[in-house]
Amino acid sequence: MMNMPHWEHFEHEADIGIRGIAPTLEQAFEQAAVAMTAVVTDPELVSDALAVPIKCEAPDNELLLVSWINELVYEMSAHGWLFNRYRVAIDGGKLTATAFGVAVDRQKHQPAVEIKGATFTGLHVYRQADGMWVAQCVVDV
Amino acid sequence: MDTGQFIQRDETCWEIEPKGAMHVPAIIYADAQLLQEMDQKVYEQITNVATLPGIVQAAYAMPDAHWGYGFPIGGVAAFDPDQGGIVSAGGVGFDISCGVRTLHTGLNIDQLQPHKQALADALYRTVPAGVGSRGKIHLNHKTMHGMLTGGARWALDQGFGEQRDLERIEEHGCMAGAEPHYVSPRARERQQDEMGTLGSGNHYLEVQRVAEIFDPAVAKTFSLRVGDVVISIHCGSRGLGHQIGTEFLKDMAMAAAQYQIALPDRELACAPLNSPLGKQYLGAMRAAINCALANRQIITHLTRQAVATVFPGIHLGLLYDVSHNTCKLERHMIDGQKKSLYVHRKGATRAFGPGHPDLPAAFKEVGQPVLIGGSMGTSSYVLCGTQASEQRAFSSACHGAGRAMSRTQATKQWQGRTLVDQLAAKGIIIRSPSMRGVAEEAPLAYKDVSAVVDIADRAGLARKVARLEPVICIKG
Image (cartoon, rainbow over all chains, first blue to last red; front, side):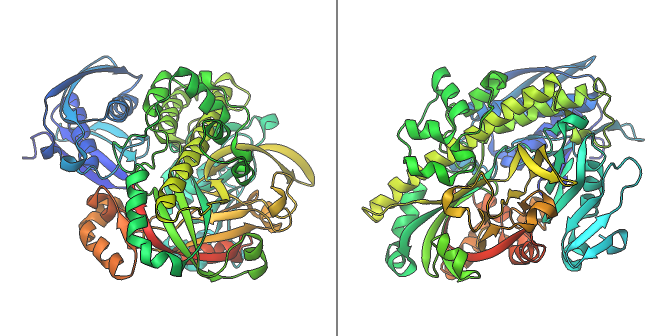
Protein backbone atom coordinates (compact mmCIF):
# COMPACT_ATOMS: atom_id res chain seq x y z
CA MET A 1 0.00 0.00 0.00
CA MET A 2 2.71 2.46 0.95
CA ASN A 3 4.17 2.46 -2.54
CA MET A 4 0.79 2.70 -4.26
CA PRO A 5 -0.37 6.12 -5.41
CA HIS A 6 -2.83 7.46 -2.84
CA TRP A 7 -4.33 10.67 -1.49
CA GLU A 8 -5.33 12.15 1.84
CA HIS A 9 -6.67 15.34 3.38
CA PHE A 10 -4.82 17.37 5.98
CA GLU A 11 -6.09 19.88 8.49
CA HIS A 12 -6.45 23.61 8.01
CA GLU A 13 -8.47 25.64 10.50
CA ALA A 14 -10.81 27.27 7.97
CA ASP A 15 -10.47 24.98 4.98
CA ILE A 16 -9.01 21.67 3.79
CA GLY A 17 -5.57 20.50 2.69
CA ILE A 18 -5.24 18.08 -0.26
CA ARG A 19 -2.25 15.75 -0.62
CA GLY A 20 -1.24 13.24 -3.30
CA ILE A 21 1.52 10.70 -2.61
CA ALA A 22 2.91 8.49 -5.38
CA PRO A 23 6.07 7.04 -6.93
CA THR A 24 6.15 9.71 -9.67
CA LEU A 25 5.57 13.46 -9.68
CA GLU A 26 2.82 13.04 -12.29
CA GLN A 27 0.95 10.47 -10.21
CA ALA A 28 1.27 12.66 -7.10
CA PHE A 29 -0.42 15.48 -9.09
CA GLU A 30 -3.15 13.03 -10.20
CA GLN A 31 -3.75 11.91 -6.61
CA ALA A 32 -3.82 15.50 -5.29
CA ALA A 33 -6.59 16.14 -7.82
CA VAL A 34 -8.57 13.11 -6.57
CA ALA A 35 -8.17 14.54 -3.04
CA MET A 36 -9.61 17.80 -4.41
CA THR A 37 -12.68 16.00 -5.81
CA ALA A 38 -13.10 14.32 -2.41
CA VAL A 39 -13.46 17.77 -0.82
CA VAL A 40 -16.60 18.22 -2.92
CA THR A 41 -18.05 14.69 -3.07
CA ASP A 42 -17.20 11.00 -2.77
CA PRO A 43 -15.04 10.32 -5.88
CA GLU A 44 -16.54 6.81 -6.06
CA LEU A 45 -19.89 8.37 -6.99
CA VAL A 46 -18.39 10.12 -10.01
CA SER A 47 -18.21 8.30 -13.36
CA ASP A 48 -15.76 9.10 -16.13
CA ALA A 49 -17.89 9.48 -19.26
CA LEU A 50 -16.22 12.74 -20.22
CA ALA A 51 -12.57 13.49 -21.10
CA VAL A 52 -11.41 17.11 -20.72
CA PRO A 53 -7.96 18.14 -21.98
CA ILE A 54 -6.02 20.47 -19.67
CA LYS A 55 -2.79 22.38 -20.15
CA CYS A 56 -0.88 24.76 -17.89
CA GLU A 57 2.65 25.84 -17.07
CA ALA A 58 4.58 27.45 -14.25
CA PRO A 59 8.20 28.24 -13.35
CA ASP A 60 8.40 25.63 -10.56
CA ASN A 61 6.64 22.47 -9.37
CA GLU A 62 4.78 24.21 -6.57
CA LEU A 63 3.27 26.92 -8.75
CA LEU A 64 2.54 24.17 -11.27
CA LEU A 65 0.51 22.25 -8.68
CA VAL A 66 -1.51 25.38 -7.82
CA SER A 67 -2.03 26.07 -11.54
CA TRP A 68 -3.14 22.46 -12.17
CA ILE A 69 -5.68 22.45 -9.35
CA ASN A 70 -6.95 25.89 -10.41
CA GLU A 71 -7.43 24.68 -14.00
CA LEU A 72 -9.67 21.93 -12.60
CA VAL A 73 -11.51 24.39 -10.29
CA TYR A 74 -12.20 26.54 -13.34
CA GLU A 75 -13.51 23.57 -15.37
CA MET A 76 -15.72 22.47 -12.48
CA SER A 77 -17.05 25.97 -11.85
CA ALA A 78 -17.55 27.21 -15.41
CA HIS A 79 -18.90 23.95 -16.85
CA GLY A 80 -20.41 22.21 -13.83
CA TRP A 81 -18.20 19.11 -14.03
CA LEU A 82 -16.85 16.71 -11.44
CA PHE A 83 -13.81 14.54 -12.11
CA ASN A 84 -12.84 11.17 -10.66
CA ARG A 85 -9.67 10.25 -12.54
CA TYR A 86 -6.78 12.06 -14.19
CA ARG A 87 -3.86 11.36 -16.50
CA VAL A 88 -0.98 13.80 -16.15
CA ALA A 89 2.27 14.34 -18.06
CA ILE A 90 4.82 16.94 -16.96
CA ASP A 91 7.72 18.09 -19.07
CA GLY A 92 9.96 21.03 -18.12
CA GLY A 93 7.34 23.04 -16.21
CA LYS A 94 4.62 22.24 -18.76
CA LEU A 95 1.69 20.08 -17.70
CA THR A 96 -0.54 18.26 -20.17
CA ALA A 97 -3.42 16.25 -18.77
CA THR A 98 -6.79 14.65 -19.31
CA ALA A 99 -9.43 14.88 -16.60
CA PHE A 100 -12.17 12.22 -16.73
CA GLY A 101 -15.55 13.00 -15.20
CA VAL A 102 -19.19 13.84 -15.58
CA ALA A 103 -21.63 16.75 -15.16
CA VAL A 104 -22.52 17.36 -11.52
CA ASP A 105 -25.80 15.74 -10.43
CA ARG A 106 -26.93 17.50 -7.25
CA GLN A 107 -29.12 14.57 -6.16
CA LYS A 108 -26.55 11.87 -6.76
CA HIS A 109 -23.31 13.64 -5.80
CA GLN A 110 -24.67 15.80 -2.95
CA PRO A 111 -21.74 18.21 -3.43
CA ALA A 112 -20.77 19.63 -0.01
CA VAL A 113 -18.88 22.76 -1.04
CA GLU A 114 -17.56 24.47 -4.12
CA ILE A 115 -13.84 25.17 -4.19
CA LYS A 116 -12.92 28.82 -4.66
CA GLY A 117 -9.29 28.15 -5.52
CA ALA A 118 -6.01 26.45 -4.63
CA THR A 119 -3.83 28.48 -2.27
CA PHE A 120 -0.11 28.73 -1.53
CA THR A 121 -0.79 27.71 2.06
CA GLY A 122 0.65 24.34 3.01
CA LEU A 123 2.01 24.25 -0.54
CA HIS A 124 4.80 21.70 -0.96
CA VAL A 125 5.94 19.48 -3.79
CA TYR A 126 8.90 17.26 -2.84
CA ARG A 127 10.38 13.81 -2.91
CA GLN A 128 10.49 11.90 0.38
CA ALA A 129 13.51 9.89 1.56
CA ASP A 130 11.69 6.70 0.47
CA GLY A 131 11.50 8.05 -3.09
CA MET A 132 7.76 8.83 -3.02
CA TRP A 133 6.59 12.20 -4.38
CA VAL A 134 4.30 14.39 -2.29
CA ALA A 135 2.16 17.17 -3.85
CA GLN A 136 0.00 19.17 -1.46
CA CYS A 137 -1.73 22.50 -0.81
CA VAL A 138 -4.74 23.95 1.02
CA VAL A 139 -7.86 24.73 -1.04
CA ASP A 140 -10.16 27.61 -0.11
CA VAL A 141 -13.80 26.55 0.16
CA MET B 1 -1.04 30.65 21.69
CA ASP B 2 1.12 31.78 24.58
CA THR B 3 0.09 35.23 25.89
CA GLY B 4 3.70 35.69 27.09
CA GLN B 5 4.66 36.59 23.50
CA PHE B 6 2.74 39.89 23.80
CA ILE B 7 2.86 43.18 25.63
CA GLN B 8 -0.63 43.68 27.02
CA ARG B 9 -1.50 47.35 26.35
CA ASP B 10 -4.94 47.22 27.94
CA GLU B 11 -7.66 44.70 28.72
CA THR B 12 -8.22 43.76 25.06
CA CYS B 13 -5.10 45.00 23.23
CA TRP B 14 -2.08 42.72 22.79
CA GLU B 15 0.97 44.05 20.98
CA ILE B 16 3.98 42.49 19.34
CA GLU B 17 6.71 45.12 19.06
CA PRO B 18 8.51 45.41 15.71
CA LYS B 19 11.36 42.93 15.36
CA GLY B 20 13.28 41.49 12.44
CA ALA B 21 11.79 42.72 9.17
CA MET B 22 8.62 44.16 10.78
CA HIS B 23 8.08 47.84 9.87
CA VAL B 24 5.29 48.37 12.43
CA PRO B 25 3.92 46.58 15.49
CA ALA B 26 1.30 43.84 15.22
CA ILE B 27 -1.77 44.17 17.43
CA ILE B 28 -4.38 41.55 18.28
CA TYR B 29 -7.66 42.53 19.96
CA ALA B 30 -8.78 39.72 22.25
CA ASP B 31 -9.07 38.75 25.90
CA ALA B 32 -6.64 36.29 27.43
CA GLN B 33 -8.92 33.34 26.74
CA LEU B 34 -9.59 34.12 23.07
CA LEU B 35 -5.89 34.83 22.57
CA GLN B 36 -4.90 31.51 24.14
CA GLU B 37 -7.36 29.72 21.89
CA MET B 38 -6.02 31.37 18.73
CA ASP B 39 -3.72 29.31 16.54
CA GLN B 40 -0.01 30.26 16.71
CA LYS B 41 -0.33 30.74 12.92
CA VAL B 42 -2.24 33.98 13.59
CA TYR B 43 0.87 35.32 15.37
CA GLU B 44 3.06 34.22 12.47
CA GLN B 45 0.75 35.66 9.83
CA ILE B 46 0.05 39.02 11.48
CA THR B 47 3.78 39.60 12.09
CA ASN B 48 4.43 38.71 8.42
CA VAL B 49 1.88 41.33 7.34
CA ALA B 50 3.82 43.89 9.43
CA THR B 51 6.85 43.32 7.16
CA LEU B 52 5.08 44.36 3.93
CA PRO B 53 6.32 47.56 2.23
CA GLY B 54 4.51 50.81 3.02
CA ILE B 55 2.39 49.48 5.90
CA VAL B 56 1.41 52.22 8.35
CA GLN B 57 0.66 52.31 12.07
CA ALA B 58 0.24 48.58 12.78
CA ALA B 59 -0.98 45.25 11.42
CA TYR B 60 -4.19 44.38 13.25
CA ALA B 61 -6.03 41.16 14.00
CA MET B 62 -9.68 41.23 15.07
CA PRO B 63 -11.06 39.09 17.94
CA ASP B 64 -12.29 36.44 15.48
CA ALA B 65 -8.86 36.07 13.85
CA HIS B 66 -7.88 32.65 12.62
CA TRP B 67 -5.38 31.01 10.32
CA GLY B 68 -5.87 32.33 6.78
CA TYR B 69 -3.78 32.65 3.62
CA GLY B 70 -0.87 35.01 4.08
CA PHE B 71 -3.08 37.44 5.98
CA PRO B 72 -4.95 35.96 8.92
CA ILE B 73 -8.73 35.95 8.47
CA GLY B 74 -9.72 38.89 10.66
CA GLY B 75 -6.68 40.89 9.48
CA VAL B 76 -6.61 44.66 8.87
CA ALA B 77 -3.66 46.55 7.34
CA ALA B 78 -3.33 49.95 5.67
CA PHE B 79 -0.72 50.93 3.09
CA ASP B 80 0.51 54.33 1.95
CA PRO B 81 1.08 54.56 -1.83
CA ASP B 82 3.58 57.39 -1.24
CA GLN B 83 5.76 55.13 0.91
CA GLY B 84 5.94 52.26 -1.56
CA GLY B 85 2.76 50.71 -0.20
CA ILE B 86 1.39 47.54 -1.75
CA VAL B 87 -1.90 45.86 -2.57
CA SER B 88 -2.16 42.14 -1.86
CA ALA B 89 -4.57 39.72 -3.53
CA GLY B 90 -4.18 37.41 -0.50
CA GLY B 91 -4.96 40.37 1.78
CA VAL B 92 -8.39 40.62 0.17
CA GLY B 93 -8.99 36.90 -0.30
CA PHE B 94 -10.64 34.76 -2.94
CA ASP B 95 -14.20 35.77 -2.11
CA ILE B 96 -13.84 39.46 -2.92
CA SER B 97 -16.42 41.66 -1.16
CA CYS B 98 -18.06 38.76 0.60
CA GLY B 99 -20.44 40.42 3.02
CA VAL B 100 -23.71 40.59 4.90
CA ARG B 101 -26.92 42.41 4.05
CA THR B 102 -29.80 42.63 6.50
CA LEU B 103 -33.40 43.40 5.52
CA HIS B 104 -36.27 44.56 7.72
CA THR B 105 -39.53 42.67 7.18
CA GLY B 106 -41.91 44.73 9.32
CA LEU B 107 -43.16 41.41 10.75
CA ASN B 108 -42.85 40.22 14.31
CA ILE B 109 -42.12 36.66 15.34
CA ASP B 110 -45.74 35.91 16.29
CA GLN B 111 -46.90 36.82 12.80
CA LEU B 112 -44.19 34.59 11.31
CA GLN B 113 -44.65 31.47 13.47
CA PRO B 114 -47.74 30.00 11.71
CA HIS B 115 -46.10 30.50 8.29
CA LYS B 116 -42.54 29.43 9.10
CA GLN B 117 -42.53 26.23 7.03
CA ALA B 118 -44.20 27.94 4.07
CA LEU B 119 -41.65 30.76 4.14
CA ALA B 120 -38.72 28.31 4.41
CA ASP B 121 -40.05 26.41 1.38
CA ALA B 122 -40.63 29.60 -0.63
CA LEU B 123 -37.13 30.93 0.09
CA TYR B 124 -35.46 27.59 -0.66
CA ARG B 125 -37.37 27.35 -3.93
CA THR B 126 -36.61 30.91 -5.02
CA VAL B 127 -32.99 31.60 -3.98
CA PRO B 128 -30.51 29.26 -5.69
CA ALA B 129 -28.12 27.75 -3.12
CA GLY B 130 -25.31 25.22 -3.09
CA VAL B 131 -22.77 23.78 -5.52
CA GLY B 132 -23.78 23.81 -9.17
CA SER B 133 -26.78 26.09 -8.68
CA ARG B 134 -27.41 28.54 -11.48
CA GLY B 135 -29.38 31.77 -11.57
CA LYS B 136 -32.05 32.66 -14.10
CA ILE B 137 -30.05 35.63 -15.41
CA HIS B 138 -27.56 35.04 -18.18
CA LEU B 139 -25.02 37.83 -18.68
CA ASN B 140 -23.82 38.64 -22.19
CA HIS B 141 -20.79 40.83 -22.89
CA LYS B 142 -22.76 44.07 -22.58
CA THR B 143 -24.68 43.21 -19.43
CA MET B 144 -21.51 41.78 -17.85
CA HIS B 145 -19.78 45.13 -18.43
CA GLY B 146 -22.76 46.99 -16.96
CA MET B 147 -22.75 44.76 -13.88
CA LEU B 148 -18.99 45.09 -13.32
CA THR B 149 -19.09 48.88 -13.47
CA GLY B 150 -22.50 49.49 -11.91
CA GLY B 151 -22.83 47.00 -9.04
CA ALA B 152 -26.17 47.22 -7.21
CA ARG B 153 -27.06 50.29 -9.31
CA TRP B 154 -26.90 48.13 -12.42
CA ALA B 155 -29.09 45.52 -10.71
CA LEU B 156 -31.60 48.25 -9.93
CA ASP B 157 -31.65 49.38 -13.56
CA GLN B 158 -32.48 45.77 -14.50
CA GLY B 159 -35.50 45.90 -12.22
CA PHE B 160 -34.00 44.22 -9.14
CA GLY B 161 -34.86 46.53 -6.29
CA GLU B 162 -35.72 50.07 -5.38
CA GLN B 163 -33.84 53.37 -5.56
CA ARG B 164 -33.88 53.75 -1.76
CA ASP B 165 -31.94 50.47 -1.37
CA LEU B 166 -28.77 52.17 -2.64
CA GLU B 167 -28.15 54.55 0.24
CA ARG B 168 -28.12 51.57 2.62
CA ILE B 169 -25.20 49.91 0.82
CA GLU B 170 -21.52 50.75 1.27
CA GLU B 171 -20.29 52.91 -1.65
CA HIS B 172 -23.99 53.63 -2.30
CA GLY B 173 -24.15 50.36 -4.16
CA CYS B 174 -21.48 51.12 -6.76
CA MET B 175 -17.72 50.84 -6.29
CA ALA B 176 -15.93 53.56 -8.22
CA GLY B 177 -12.74 52.79 -10.13
CA ALA B 178 -13.79 49.38 -11.46
CA GLU B 179 -11.93 48.46 -14.64
CA PRO B 180 -13.70 45.52 -16.29
CA HIS B 181 -11.03 45.17 -18.99
CA TYR B 182 -8.77 43.67 -16.29
CA VAL B 183 -11.37 40.97 -15.56
CA SER B 184 -10.32 37.89 -17.54
CA PRO B 185 -12.55 35.93 -19.93
CA ARG B 186 -12.44 32.99 -17.49
CA ALA B 187 -13.65 35.11 -14.57
CA ARG B 188 -16.53 36.32 -16.75
CA GLU B 189 -17.32 32.79 -17.89
CA ARG B 190 -17.51 31.57 -14.28
CA GLN B 191 -19.99 34.34 -13.51
CA GLN B 192 -22.24 34.45 -16.56
CA ASP B 193 -24.89 32.17 -15.02
CA GLU B 194 -24.17 32.74 -11.32
CA MET B 195 -25.86 36.08 -10.64
CA GLY B 196 -28.32 35.84 -7.76
CA THR B 197 -26.87 32.64 -6.28
CA LEU B 198 -25.78 32.14 -2.67
CA GLY B 199 -22.87 29.76 -3.21
CA SER B 200 -21.82 27.22 -0.61
CA GLY B 201 -19.56 26.84 2.45
CA ASN B 202 -20.45 29.33 5.16
CA HIS B 203 -22.81 31.32 2.93
CA TYR B 204 -26.47 31.49 3.82
CA LEU B 205 -29.76 33.32 3.84
CA GLU B 206 -31.26 33.47 7.30
CA VAL B 207 -34.59 34.60 8.70
CA GLN B 208 -33.88 35.89 12.19
CA ARG B 209 -35.72 37.39 15.14
CA VAL B 210 -34.35 40.24 17.23
CA ALA B 211 -33.76 38.48 20.56
CA GLU B 212 -32.05 41.18 22.61
CA ILE B 213 -31.36 44.90 22.46
CA PHE B 214 -28.23 46.31 24.08
CA ASP B 215 -28.46 49.95 23.01
CA PRO B 216 -32.11 51.08 22.78
CA ALA B 217 -31.34 54.50 21.28
CA VAL B 218 -29.23 53.17 18.42
CA ALA B 219 -31.59 50.22 17.93
CA LYS B 220 -34.39 52.73 17.43
CA THR B 221 -32.34 54.52 14.77
CA PHE B 222 -31.72 51.14 13.13
CA SER B 223 -35.49 50.33 13.44
CA LEU B 224 -34.87 47.19 15.48
CA ARG B 225 -37.20 46.06 18.28
CA VAL B 226 -37.26 42.82 20.28
CA GLY B 227 -39.39 40.29 18.40
CA ASP B 228 -38.91 41.90 14.98
CA VAL B 229 -38.17 39.55 12.10
CA VAL B 230 -35.24 40.41 9.81
CA ILE B 231 -33.58 38.53 6.94
CA SER B 232 -29.79 38.39 6.50
CA ILE B 233 -27.92 37.38 3.36
CA HIS B 234 -24.26 36.29 3.55
CA CYS B 235 -22.46 35.78 0.22
CA GLY B 236 -19.91 37.36 -2.10
CA SER B 237 -18.65 37.75 -5.64
CA ARG B 238 -19.03 34.07 -6.56
CA GLY B 239 -16.92 32.51 -9.33
CA LEU B 240 -15.83 35.86 -10.74
CA GLY B 241 -14.16 36.98 -7.51
CA HIS B 242 -12.60 33.56 -6.97
CA GLN B 243 -11.08 33.56 -10.45
CA ILE B 244 -9.71 37.11 -10.11
CA GLY B 245 -8.16 36.18 -6.75
CA THR B 246 -6.63 33.02 -8.23
CA GLU B 247 -5.13 34.75 -11.26
CA PHE B 248 -3.66 37.77 -9.48
CA LEU B 249 -2.26 35.67 -6.63
CA LYS B 250 -0.15 33.78 -9.17
CA ASP B 251 0.80 36.92 -11.13
CA MET B 252 1.81 38.73 -7.94
CA ALA B 253 3.82 35.76 -6.63
CA MET B 254 5.72 35.60 -9.92
CA ALA B 255 6.30 39.38 -10.02
CA ALA B 256 7.50 39.80 -6.42
CA ALA B 257 11.17 39.45 -7.36
CA GLN B 258 10.76 42.00 -10.15
CA TYR B 259 9.40 44.50 -7.61
CA GLN B 260 12.14 43.53 -5.14
CA ILE B 261 9.63 42.50 -2.52
CA ALA B 262 10.92 39.84 -0.12
CA LEU B 263 7.91 37.70 0.75
CA PRO B 264 8.06 35.89 4.10
CA ASP B 265 5.21 33.73 2.78
CA ARG B 266 4.33 33.29 -0.91
CA GLU B 267 0.67 33.74 -0.10
CA LEU B 268 1.40 37.37 0.85
CA ALA B 269 1.99 37.97 -2.86
CA CYS B 270 1.51 41.64 -3.56
CA ALA B 271 2.45 44.44 -5.94
CA PRO B 272 3.20 48.12 -5.35
CA LEU B 273 0.04 50.24 -5.49
CA ASN B 274 1.70 52.43 -8.09
CA SER B 275 2.82 49.53 -10.31
CA PRO B 276 0.94 48.40 -13.43
CA LEU B 277 0.12 45.05 -11.80
CA GLY B 278 -1.09 46.74 -8.60
CA LYS B 279 -3.36 49.04 -10.62
CA GLN B 280 -4.70 46.18 -12.71
CA TYR B 281 -5.58 44.25 -9.58
CA LEU B 282 -7.32 47.26 -8.02
CA GLY B 283 -9.38 47.73 -11.19
CA ALA B 284 -10.37 44.05 -11.35
CA MET B 285 -10.98 43.79 -7.58
CA ARG B 286 -13.30 46.82 -7.66
CA ALA B 287 -15.24 45.21 -10.51
CA ALA B 288 -15.56 42.10 -8.29
CA ILE B 289 -16.87 44.31 -5.45
CA ASN B 290 -19.57 45.48 -7.86
CA CYS B 291 -20.30 41.86 -8.72
CA ALA B 292 -20.86 41.06 -5.02
CA LEU B 293 -23.06 44.14 -4.53
CA ALA B 294 -25.12 43.24 -7.62
CA ASN B 295 -25.37 39.64 -6.45
CA ARG B 296 -26.72 40.59 -3.01
CA GLN B 297 -29.09 43.04 -4.70
CA ILE B 298 -30.53 40.32 -6.95
CA ILE B 299 -30.82 37.91 -4.01
CA THR B 300 -32.69 40.68 -2.18
CA HIS B 301 -35.10 40.89 -5.11
CA LEU B 302 -35.60 37.10 -5.08
CA THR B 303 -36.12 37.22 -1.31
CA ARG B 304 -38.77 39.91 -1.73
CA GLN B 305 -40.53 37.74 -4.32
CA ALA B 306 -40.43 34.68 -2.06
CA VAL B 307 -41.67 36.57 1.01
CA ALA B 308 -44.50 38.15 -1.02
CA THR B 309 -45.90 34.69 -1.79
CA VAL B 310 -46.41 34.09 1.93
CA PHE B 311 -46.97 37.64 3.18
CA PRO B 312 -48.46 39.60 0.28
CA GLY B 313 -47.98 43.34 0.40
CA ILE B 314 -45.18 43.58 2.97
CA HIS B 315 -42.15 45.71 2.20
CA LEU B 316 -38.56 44.57 2.81
CA GLY B 317 -36.31 47.59 3.32
CA LEU B 318 -32.56 47.45 3.87
CA LEU B 319 -30.96 47.93 7.27
CA TYR B 320 -27.50 47.93 5.64
CA ASP B 321 -25.06 46.01 3.43
CA VAL B 322 -21.43 45.52 4.53
CA SER B 323 -18.48 43.83 2.82
CA HIS B 324 -15.74 42.09 4.78
CA ASN B 325 -13.13 41.07 2.14
CA THR B 326 -11.93 44.28 0.50
CA CYS B 327 -9.15 46.77 -0.11
CA LYS B 328 -10.47 50.34 -0.18
CA LEU B 329 -8.95 53.79 -0.51
CA GLU B 330 -9.90 55.75 2.61
CA ARG B 331 -8.82 58.85 4.53
CA HIS B 332 -7.41 58.16 7.98
CA MET B 333 -5.50 60.12 10.62
CA ILE B 334 -1.83 59.17 10.86
CA ASP B 335 0.32 61.12 13.32
CA GLY B 336 -2.19 63.97 13.36
CA GLN B 337 -2.44 64.18 9.57
CA LYS B 338 -5.19 62.95 7.23
CA LYS B 339 -3.76 60.51 4.72
CA SER B 340 -5.19 58.52 1.83
CA LEU B 341 -4.52 54.86 2.57
CA TYR B 342 -5.42 51.53 1.00
CA VAL B 343 -7.03 49.58 3.82
CA HIS B 344 -7.12 45.79 3.46
CA ARG B 345 -9.83 44.08 5.46
CA LYS B 346 -9.61 40.29 5.17
CA GLY B 347 -12.52 38.92 7.16
CA ALA B 348 -13.04 42.26 8.89
CA THR B 349 -15.96 44.69 8.65
CA ARG B 350 -15.65 48.42 8.07
CA ALA B 351 -17.09 50.23 11.08
CA PHE B 352 -17.29 53.97 10.41
CA GLY B 353 -18.19 55.97 13.50
CA PRO B 354 -20.64 58.86 13.96
CA GLY B 355 -20.13 61.80 11.62
CA HIS B 356 -18.21 59.95 8.94
CA PRO B 357 -18.84 61.69 5.59
CA ASP B 358 -19.52 58.43 3.72
CA LEU B 359 -22.47 57.46 5.91
CA PRO B 360 -26.10 57.99 4.82
CA ALA B 361 -27.97 60.72 6.69
CA ALA B 362 -29.90 58.16 8.75
CA PHE B 363 -26.71 56.86 10.40
CA LYS B 364 -24.65 60.08 10.62
CA GLU B 365 -25.33 60.51 14.33
CA VAL B 366 -24.89 56.93 15.52
CA GLY B 367 -22.34 55.36 13.16
CA GLN B 368 -22.84 52.64 10.58
CA PRO B 369 -24.55 49.33 11.23
CA VAL B 370 -21.89 46.61 11.58
CA LEU B 371 -23.45 43.26 10.66
CA ILE B 372 -21.81 40.20 12.22
CA GLY B 373 -22.97 36.81 10.97
CA GLY B 374 -22.99 33.87 13.32
CA SER B 375 -22.57 30.25 12.34
CA MET B 376 -25.57 28.08 11.44
CA GLY B 377 -27.97 27.85 14.38
CA THR B 378 -26.23 30.49 16.51
CA SER B 379 -26.80 34.20 17.15
CA SER B 380 -25.82 37.00 14.80
CA TYR B 381 -25.21 40.56 15.97
CA VAL B 382 -25.81 44.12 14.88
CA LEU B 383 -23.24 46.60 16.17
CA CYS B 384 -22.57 50.24 15.35
CA GLY B 385 -19.37 52.05 14.43
CA THR B 386 -17.64 54.15 17.11
CA GLN B 387 -15.35 57.17 17.12
CA ALA B 388 -12.73 55.13 19.00
CA SER B 389 -12.50 52.53 16.24
CA GLU B 390 -10.67 55.03 14.00
CA GLN B 391 -7.68 54.97 16.36
CA ARG B 392 -8.06 51.32 17.27
CA ALA B 393 -7.92 49.77 13.77
CA PHE B 394 -8.80 52.22 10.96
CA SER B 395 -12.51 51.88 11.83
CA SER B 396 -12.73 48.10 11.58
CA ALA B 397 -14.41 45.35 13.55
CA CYS B 398 -14.75 41.57 13.48
CA HIS B 399 -16.85 39.79 10.81
CA GLY B 400 -18.11 36.57 12.34
CA ALA B 401 -17.34 33.80 14.74
CA GLY B 402 -14.31 32.30 13.02
CA ARG B 403 -13.82 28.56 12.78
CA ALA B 404 -12.63 26.68 15.82
CA MET B 405 -12.42 23.32 14.08
CA SER B 406 -11.49 22.16 10.57
CA ARG B 407 -14.09 20.82 8.13
CA THR B 408 -12.49 17.37 8.27
CA GLN B 409 -12.87 17.24 12.07
CA ALA B 410 -16.43 18.55 11.86
CA THR B 411 -17.57 15.81 9.45
CA LYS B 412 -15.99 13.18 11.73
CA GLN B 413 -17.89 14.55 14.71
CA TRP B 414 -21.36 15.33 13.33
CA GLN B 415 -23.88 14.08 10.80
CA GLY B 416 -25.83 16.62 8.77
CA ARG B 417 -29.21 14.94 9.21
CA THR B 418 -28.81 14.71 13.01
CA LEU B 419 -27.84 18.39 13.19
CA VAL B 420 -30.88 19.39 11.13
CA ASP B 421 -33.13 17.41 13.50
CA GLN B 422 -31.47 18.87 16.61
CA LEU B 423 -31.87 22.42 15.30
CA ALA B 424 -35.48 21.67 14.31
CA ALA B 425 -36.16 20.67 17.94
CA LYS B 426 -34.94 24.15 18.88
CA GLY B 427 -37.36 25.69 16.39
CA ILE B 428 -34.74 26.42 13.70
CA ILE B 429 -35.54 25.21 10.18
CA ILE B 430 -32.52 24.32 8.00
CA ARG B 431 -32.85 23.88 4.24
CA SER B 432 -29.76 22.72 2.35
CA PRO B 433 -28.98 20.66 -0.75
CA SER B 434 -26.05 18.93 1.02
CA MET B 435 -26.12 17.17 4.40
CA ARG B 436 -22.33 16.92 4.39
CA GLY B 437 -22.22 20.68 3.84
CA VAL B 438 -24.43 21.06 6.93
CA ALA B 439 -22.09 18.85 8.99
CA GLU B 440 -19.06 20.91 7.93
CA GLU B 441 -20.85 24.05 9.11
CA ALA B 442 -21.92 22.59 12.48
CA PRO B 443 -22.50 25.34 15.07
CA LEU B 444 -19.83 23.96 17.42
CA ALA B 445 -17.21 23.96 14.64
CA TYR B 446 -17.11 27.74 15.15
CA LYS B 447 -15.96 29.91 18.02
CA ASP B 448 -18.57 31.40 20.29
CA VAL B 449 -19.67 34.46 18.31
CA SER B 450 -20.94 36.12 21.50
CA ALA B 451 -17.46 36.07 23.05
CA VAL B 452 -15.97 37.56 19.86
CA VAL B 453 -18.57 40.33 19.72
CA ASP B 454 -18.16 41.12 23.44
CA ILE B 455 -14.45 41.73 22.88
CA ALA B 456 -15.11 43.88 19.80
CA ASP B 457 -17.44 45.95 22.01
CA ARG B 458 -15.04 46.14 24.97
CA ALA B 459 -12.13 47.00 22.67
CA GLY B 460 -14.12 49.91 21.22
CA LEU B 461 -13.97 48.51 17.68
CA ALA B 462 -17.78 48.70 17.47
CA ARG B 463 -20.65 48.85 20.00
CA LYS B 464 -23.25 46.14 20.53
CA VAL B 465 -26.78 47.12 19.47
CA ALA B 466 -28.81 43.93 19.03
CA ARG B 467 -28.61 40.15 19.03
CA LEU B 468 -30.43 38.13 16.39
CA GLU B 469 -31.48 34.48 16.67
CA PRO B 470 -32.03 32.24 13.63
CA VAL B 471 -35.51 30.98 12.73
CA ILE B 472 -34.93 29.69 9.17
CA CYS B 473 -31.55 29.06 7.54
CA ILE B 474 -31.06 28.39 3.82
CA LYS B 475 -27.54 26.93 3.58
CA GLY B 476 -25.56 26.96 0.40
